Structures are given as structure tokens and as C-alpha cells.
View 1 (cartoon, rainbow, N blue to C red):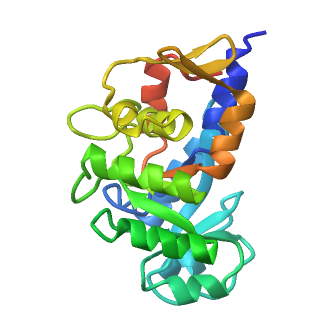
View 2: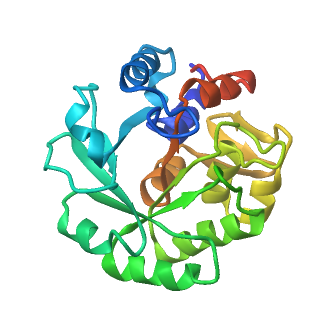
Length: 247
């Protein structure tokens, strides 16, 4: 038995929240559902997490076979499929506090970051960070966010710009972000551009450091919950090119 598969499953299971309705894909609903069906049928479908939908379109969304994360762009009717709600800060705080389930508040990576994280920690809410899109945050700012969440025991999700497995062309890599969450030393982990992250002897390894499945499960539960991506196949294909997938 390949024990490294245990570490890969612990690190990658339900990692990608699929958001094909959002930029840059911005697919029509029929095309988004087709892309999601393809993801559900993929050999690495265990990496697939929730379907992400704008609140304004939740009524149009048919059953996608799993839970939904709603991005607030207006009011929406309660729906048993909704497992998480996402909103900017401070607009969504009052709404999110009134909703059941997981609440992710997007915070800007500016001089107010620590203060905003303090507020979320005091309210027992989760955080959301944008890693790309209109602009890509510097390594130092994203590192501050990861470190700040860990220090305050805030669970977070990341979104935008994470189609690459490893950092390249100035864009952040999803393995880099996972390594920052698992090992700390955030600036260095986020800056790596070579395939230095390994699944070795049942562990996720970086240099002389390694974490086994139990630790990886804890990090995914208590630090980095998921990564939102408008594409499922692109990041999975890059993980395949590095040998991380399929199991």
C-alpha cells in the first residue's frame, strides 16, 4: 500500500470550492453545471468541495449533489443546501452573524488587517482572502494573513488566482499556500517556485520538515479550510503534473 496516499488525501480532500459562475470563467449556468458534472466524474473528484453560487442566483441552481457556499450579493431565501456564506467586511457582519453554518468574511490585506482579524476572532467567525484576480497581493501581505489567522485560531478560505500548484509568473500556488498553513515560515513557503513539496513515506514534506496525515487533517480543519477556484480541472492538472494526483 502506498502510505503517501493517506497524506495526499488528508491534505487535498475537499480542497477546491468550485466557482465556475465567477470570473475569470464567468460561465453561463448551463455551462457551469456541465463543468461541475465533469469535475464530479473526475478520477480526483475527492478534491472537489462545495459549489459556489451568488445569492442572487441560488434560486436558479438545481441540485448539484453536495453543499453550496453562497456569496452574498443581495438577500436570499433560506435553503437547506447552503453550508457556508461569504461576504465582504464590514458589510456582511450583521447578516452573517444571523445565519447558521460557516461564515467567511473577506478581509483586505492592508493596514487594517490585524484589527479586522481581531474582530473576526472575537465573533468566532472565519476569514476569506483574495490571492489574485484584479491584483495579486505581495508574498509579505499574504504571509501576514496566514500567520494572523493561525495566531488567532481563525479558520480561513482563499480564493482567486490559485490555478497553479506552485508559484509561477508572480502568481501564488495552492501548494505554497498549503505549505504556509502546515509548516509556518510563511514568506519562504509562499516564495518557493520549484517542486520542493513532496509526498514522501506517508507525509507531506518540505525540505527537512514533514507532516503526517493526522497533522494535515488538523491543519485543514483548524487553519485552511478550502480554496475557491472557477476551474477545477486546471489546478488538478497541475497537481497531476507534479505526481501529487491521482491517488
